[in-house]
Amino acid sequence: MLTAIAEGIEAETSDRFFSSLVRSLSLALNVAYAFVTRLSDDSTHFKMLALWERDHFGRNVELPLMGTVCQGVLHGQIAHYPAALRARFPDDHLLAEWGAQSYCGVPVFDRQGGVFGHVAIIDDKPMPDGPRGIAVMRIFAARVRAEVERLRMEDALRLSEQRLPRLIEDCE
Image (cartoon, rainbow, N blue to C red; front, side):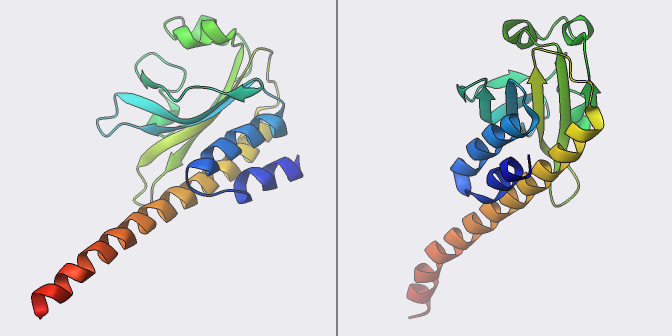
């Protein structure tokens, strides 16, 4: 498990980072699905940044938040539903499509303390060991936060580099 965690949080950066993370998370916790999301600015939708489905990467879709198992987590709560997941969230059609029975999710907070998105796992069998999954997922969520901040800084630097020639030109 430690090897899978290390590979998932250290191996890649940028867009490949999120893909590596969800694959490693699924392998580390032996679950069918793992994903990392970003919450929309208006907090009504969330978009998959990376999705691991059993043995391959899934499509990064955007979904409405209301009525989903992810809703509480994307409002800042940690959630663990060890079994009977679809009975608790009958309006979450993706759970039925995946044959989901259990879920565990942790929020990813931004630098200001707001919710950026979340890291979650779903399985088609019960997931009784919530504390272990939550502990591992908190490590992954912290790494997501660091990568998001790194990407923001990289974008800010790129913008500064683009403005510099114009500033020099204006001073001449």
